[in-house]
View (cartoon, rainbow, N blue to C red):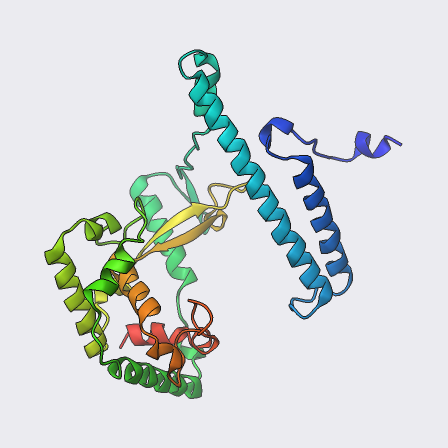
Length: 302
C-alpha cells in the first residue's frame, strides 16, 4: 500500500508554513476541490447558469472567505503575542519579525533571443525590446470596416463628453481625493497621491480647472497616455533569467487616475447615454466599451 509513496514524487504538508490552516479551512478547501472536480467532469462550462459552475464558484468564495478570516485571526493573535513579549522575550519577537520580511526579486541576468545580458543598461534595453515585441501592432491585420466602426465610436464618445454641461466641483474632487491610498506607485511624472492630497487649495483649484478643460475639449494630455512598465516576477520555480517568467505592470499617471475616478463616480450621463460608457450596476466599463478597447489605441495616435 506504500508503493506509490515510495516511487512517486509527492509533497508533505508543512504545518509551520500555514499555521492559520484550521480544520474549518481544510474542510472548505476539500469541499471546493470536490465541486471543481464535478464541474470539470461535466464539461467545464464557464457559465453562471450552469449548476456545476455555480456550485464550484460558491464553494470557492466560501473557502476564500474562511481562509481570510482564519488568517486575520492568526495575525491578530501574533500581534498580541508580540506586544506581550516585546520586553520580556526578545528571542521570540525578532525571529517572527524577520520571517515577515519579503525578499525582493532582483533581475541580475536576462536571456532574450539567445543572448545573455548582465549589465544594468543592457538588461533595461533587453526589457524594452521584449515588451515592444509583445505590444507591437501589425497594421496589415487591421480590418477597414472595423477601423471605420472604431472612428464612429470615437465620435460618439466625444459627443457624450461634450454633452456634459456641469463642471467638476470642488466637492466631487475632495470626495475622491480623501479616499486615495498612500504609498502607491507613481507614473513617469513621479507625482504621487500624497502630492495631490496634501498639495493645498491652490493645487486643487488648478486641477479642477484642468479636468473641466479636458472634458470640454475632449483632449487627454499626452503625458497621461505614457506609462512605465515594471516587470513583476510570477513566482514559483520559474526561470528568473527568462522574460516570460515576469508579468509587465504598467504604471500610469496618478493625476489621470484621479480624473478617471471622478468621471466614473459622478458623471451619471455617461451611464444613461446611448453609448453607455459605464455599466449602470457596477463601476466597470460596459460590455460595449470592452469590445472596443482598441479604440483608445487608435485615438492615442490621432
